View 1 (tube, rainbow, N blue to C red):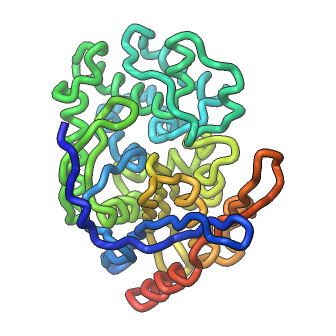
View 2: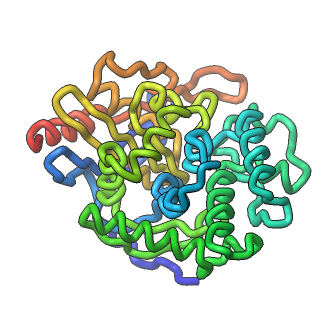
View 3: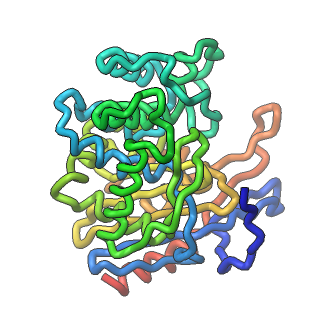
Length: 341
């Protein structure tokens, strides 16, 4: 395994600070990339160095499967396949029915139980015991079923769906490379994601360009966009900002490691924004996205207050500090948007 030893990366900026009492305890550094109507990419911090897309890639990985013209792939299933879901009963039942309809059995599964940072704790109130139950509650299970179904269409033994050189993943890699090229960027490479399937490395500005394309495409991506907007609960679930935003026609997708992507149409323009928190803290990426949307839209987008402030509690549940987003740097970013549109 190669070890990254070059830490000479362009500087990031403090996106948020966490206080304890009257003292700053943590500074959360990160980067933000923006794509505008004029095709311009800009932002704050290093938005050119490739990084893993993690789960922000999921909507785009579905392109080869949708090209199979499979009538059993409903909009609800497309949304689930693009998801990082909570593993709630709704998600598990939809996944189980899909597996039954497509004759996918437990022996084919190459996935364990996901960590909890993207999930609703209520969804895991009972510890999963069987392979099937762990799979159904895994935040990436929808993606795995999509790859298994693609393998079936390509006459690949379903038990080998996670083979990185197999027909299914080769087809996905090719499709992603094509769409990245379509937005005038390059696929830098790939690594192994937390779920065992590949994740792909591109720049932050590339992810912003892809989400702008997802917002505007009138062909293949339009189907994925429509599915996510029609079934926002399938994409995430209870108490998730992604679902809250999708319900209000804002394209939103989070990714492990402090990534959050949004794309929306405003009265005078459209915009895509991707946030990366360098420490990988998902909650900070979510809070930064919420604050940016509030600045962009005022009261047009209803964002619950819990996403706009982070209260620090002690072990007794008493508030002892807070996390505040760096509003000054976000205002500077939005001024750049006005200048470039």
